Amino acid sequence: MTKIITFIALFITSIVLGQTNYEKGMQDALSLWKNKKPSEATAILERIASVEEGNWLPNYYIALINTTQSFRYMDDKSKVKILLETAQKAQDKINIIAPDNPEVLVMQAMIHTAWIVYDPMANGQKLSGDIMYIYNKAYKLAPENPRVVFSKADFEMGMASYFGQDTKPMCAEIEKSLELFANFIPKTPFHPTWGLDRANETSEKCKK
Image (tube, rainbow, N blue to C red):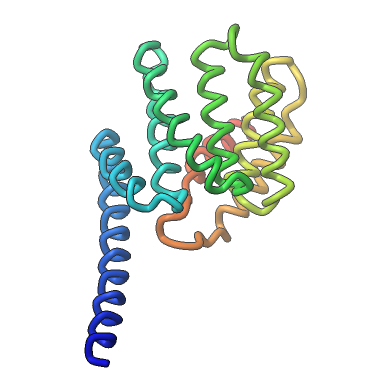
């Protein structure tokens, strides 16, 4: 009986420690990213992802960090290619883990969008339809998710501007996203919360 109790106690302790290690690792990684140390953040996230194989969040942030970095280095095509390939490798894993998660869908659309910015002539026509399909799917799944609403409207606005079409409907959706951001509560401290700054910036452009 004593052995059983000891085993249970050790088992529970290992779970608690595991959760603590995960939480600390995620906190450290996101803090490093916030402090403009993406490589260091990604290294921690890769270690977490290798342990938390069924958890989509570590690889999600690997994809997000590399994709957002790619937009900053579009003048360096070789660097962008590496960043986006790294992002897609992480994305491929979460596409399997959580294929119908709206946050995961938005992330895949963002990677495709970065490839269009990387080479509009080669990738614009090829990927635009896929992006809209993904955003429409995400919108059906989570019409109250602020990142879904904003990202979909933002992409549609870019398309409308390119073709000289009216952007007022997209501006209305962006205003809607601001309300959704104000009321959004993440499931855990590590679930996505980004997007408000970009939504505010885009909203200001709509008013000009």
